[in-house]
Length: 238
Image (cartoon, rainbow, N blue to C red; front, side):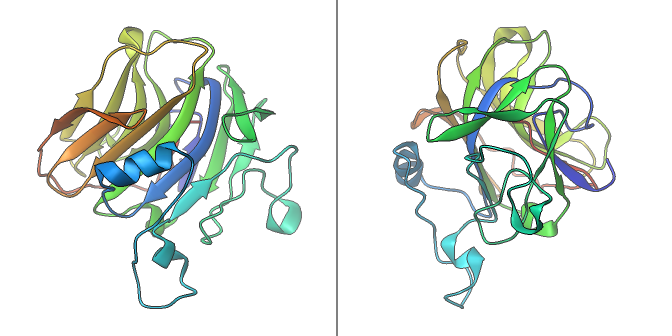
């Protein structure tokens, strides 16, 4: 709501909070290849050339990169926000509820207790591309009766997600979602995940084909050929 982006909560900013840990959450404004996804699994973020200036953060191929390595609140530029954006775009996130730091997959992670914790990031159109890759390292403490999303952006039709990545309901299956501004939604799903284990989830969409990867392996794909649509709220669930 209010034009914010959220980490660790659903696209409405209040429902289906995350119960577990999130680490290294990334947004690219293009669809990563299978080889690049495998590189990311190893912990190296290698971008693609986008733009014409060497000092342009987009030349690194990242528009959002939250390492989640902070050990305490108010550590970002200006001493206000808590999860600092390493993409160069200053899309820093603020902790809400009981969000805190804990041991992660790489260094630290951000911990959520499933009771309304989340991270909010002020809206920016750099996080609303026409083609996209979203990725995050996730570990669940518990699954809920509904979905839990490590990253999600609400479309103009309330309830639909422009794009989302996480697990679906009681099936505990990883899911990647894309949607039009009118709320026409498409998704692909993998096989059930477990609690207490770190997983690397990646969703890519090139304007035609959507692909879901788990731990570097392609697990599902579809070709909805839709145009991503966005509203004032951008949400990421960590």
